[in-house]
Image (cartoon, rainbow, N blue to C red; front, side):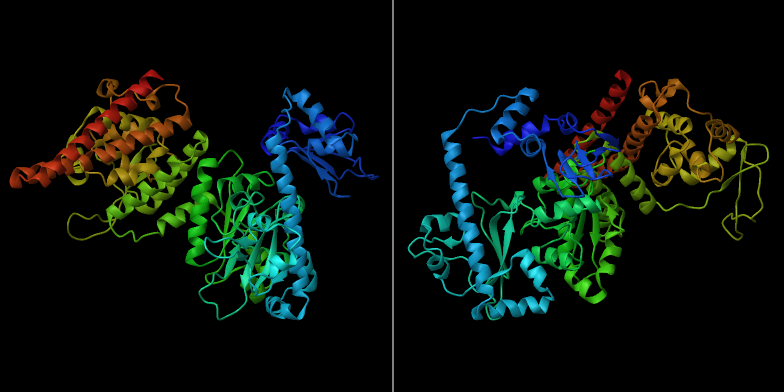
Length: 626
């Protein structure tokens, strides 16, 4: 017996365009190949082969399939002959027959018969007098007869033994295994679905594998509003997307796939003409379901309700997707107006309103930023630091290193812009090619009259800046390395200036660089060096940072890698005084109080300081050896 896993492996090792190209002349069309359809006569090509997704499709006659289907439908081979031929070309051995697997497949086939019979019975119940309550509900939803017929709505009557009596030709054990009956110790089995509007859940081939039921009696407040089948040999809710067999062909034409929260949302969207919709089944979107979506489109759209539950569902989907991200594959997010689901919006404003929302989805990184930014009040520095920690924790889950690096940079830029708003620059370019200070305002405390003045050029002016911006500022190798890096890569000054400006005890030369970083015009290394010298300060010499041979100081550094390394060094520089101040405070408190609590706090901070020093050494060593 061939397992689905083995067949997937065979498909992944087969280049579909090479197989089809043996008998059909294909032309390259972007990421796909196209040709006139071999299954019907046509003059213009509407037959496409997609190697990434592993299927062919004709938009004229609807022919669709994978490599195995091509060999059976076009080449006329039997299924096993097609598999053996493709396996030989792919270097795979066809598994020997497995009696247990064959028995399991036979059981699945039998359960499919049970589910098909149950679906026919549910549908028939909807048209009899007892099903009037179901028809009335469908009328309130505005679903027309075509929609009701297309999605296979039915009705489960109230009786606890009604389904058993209707499907008496099947053994009780099969009805229980199919999830249609419930077996409880010490009690007789009874029907799972009673007094509910029924909706079949189908697999990718359109076969019924489970059911969803909506309760109709208003007085049953203790019963769940929606009830789905349990997991069975046919049904795994984490690996199933409702309506995929209908949505996939529609998605191939529209180029998009929309994920909504529930199957009734899917029906409402389809009734409004938006056919490429699917839904998970009572759980957050799983990793497997995300991969299933990516087989059809690279960036599916997740459409969530505008309430808090919808926001939580969006974040759960994002956290599931982050580790899986790969080039060109992501998620886009649409959030409905608060208090509305898709059916509400369509009824209130029409299908055009929904289409308008779907046409402007937000990127995954944008929604992640907004969700974490708005999660808690950000009224203190500690709150803002917590925001950054949460964002970086998300980045750490991304397995693709290129995407992780880009997310880190994007989120750091957004965080810096939010936490450190730009201030007005006091430096402007002058006619001589250098910079001059522009000091504005008048009044007490040494404010200026608004006229440009030449940049100060004496060591005393640097002393005044030291006292004003970096009281007690000290020089050390890490500071010198970062200053040299900012001079070498001046474009990064704008990104990090505000964070550095709020860091106490830094090398006084940072104040001069910070003051000119927002000046109009392009910052250049030679101009930054000129400003330092004009104010009595020298650019760092290599001897100052010889213990920190970072990669961003090299003569042939890669701009992207250097920006990443310099950002890491700046983060360490900013973290250091905060950690040292906390350790100093804890030590002074312990010397005063001398308790177990103060000792534990002091030791904890000492360990953090040792970890910090170790990280700094490892970073410098890594760059030196790379």
